[in-house]
Length: 235
Image 1 (spheres, one colour):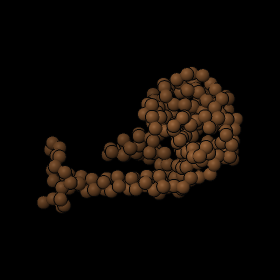
Image 2: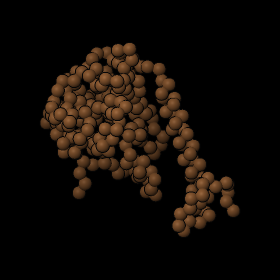
Image 3: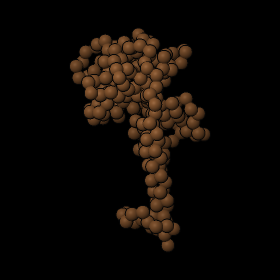
Image 4: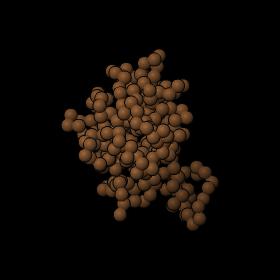
């Protein structure tokens, strides 16, 4: 006998009652998770506006569409008719000699870059690093990124002002949202799970919402594992 009312009529070849009972139990948890995700998103949308940016930061920027390096101010990141900006802070060394961009950040933008033309139908999107824009551009070309606007904050205090680096200059992989209201640009949200102590056996999971690789692993018997991580190259 089934332990509870079945949630749908779809069945797969060879499954037995024990499997269906367990799968229905999991499905109830997945439904509750879906509800919780929407509830948190609704709560996030109700956030009051954060503080106004302290200055109109000047970046060096590069876009694969026009393939030129330009000076871009923070206010320039808001296209006409789009009052929301999503920024991903990419861990890339500031040193001109370094050629070691973060493998994890790279895997995130590898996945997100193809979605950028869809995302930018509604909001603005950019990726900002501390390293030189020429190095960042070269990395983008090697990875085949075709859509993401890249920025270098190497000559301003943006990273320091928004706690995106340690006092020693170590870079943090933080997602941010800024909004433009009544002509002023204000901080709205950052992925603050980065600073919140994770549960035992987990990492911060602060940018997993934009990193689909982990969600794929979560559906498998192997799960995420405990030691594997992305690399720039696989032999």
